Image (cartoon, rainbow, N blue to C red; front, top):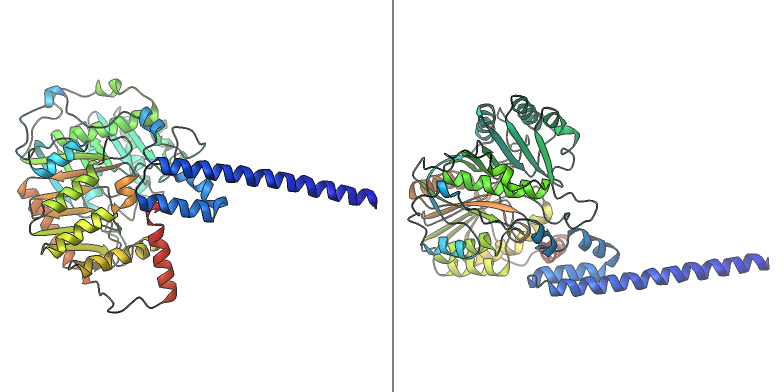
Length: 483
């Protein structure tokens, strides 16, 4: 009996000792994480959100920050080539007439590329058209196929693309498929093995586990780029999955937007792919550049385009500052079409000031997105916009996934970035600024077609009513910087 009591006391003390050790270790780890968080000089809202999670729920917040925290990690930035796409010397022509506009200059100063003339731009407004264009370009490629995808679906669309790429690899075409490791978590290994077996290459961008300097679950490659023979590029918001594109109409297919580009801008998009590919595979960029024929980047149209990469591999914040500049330079109207609307204070206040100054601002959102938490988080910002005089429109399902911004029919923006904190401050994103009037007018015509399907968002005259809705909205907005 005495021995049992003694054993019990010994076990209790041992467990208490280790529990105390783990508690102290957890406290110290949380302390150092908070110190690191403060030293990173994030936006105040982002810092406060992480502090809240780490302090209130440390057993959840500490590992979450280790996995998802951090942004422009110095170790990562040192490993990845600083990305500011430039044309090869033989492809450089006369400067664009729009290179001196305030918006273009803002982007250049913030780390973006210069506008380039001599491009051909054609908008793609349906998933069927996008798929047929992708399929046609894959079948007709003569030298190389470079594709970056955030999501590759394990569905009929994904399988058909994998089959096509494997077929072209067997034909001797250089096929390179770069998949985001988190977005393509279930389709980046065995599902794409036929491409590897046929002689093509498949790489995963920044695997999540194990934790090393080259891995972070937070820094995702959200770029969607397809480049064929270094001369033609598809860019926009569509992922390679049935919800986004396919050979036949589908009544639940999401609304999205993109473009096919030929000319110098396509060569610049190819440079973005090469930088991402070489980071993921550790292959030398010179080997890929050696494959590029001398005619790449030559003038083939009348469109002036400005390729803007954004993310941890870009010095500065060109996409974010470019959007602010577009807002500030607007004189008459601004149209923003986005699936998620979670701006930071500067963007929100810039839009509110413009609306109060009489600028006609139209914000188009899905009535219900695929992420309910972002719908709760956007409520505050939507109310603020409408109270300032902006027109807020909601479009019924299927889901609106398009990303575009048009200002005064003088400049437009399309690409992969959403109007939220994650796209603007965390992800690797790609954008194309459209400066040529005819192309901006085509974007405006597409936007008007979208607007014609929308209904006005109705602002409740009083305070919010439902308790659950109040709590969900407040918590979502508080955690919005982490979404």
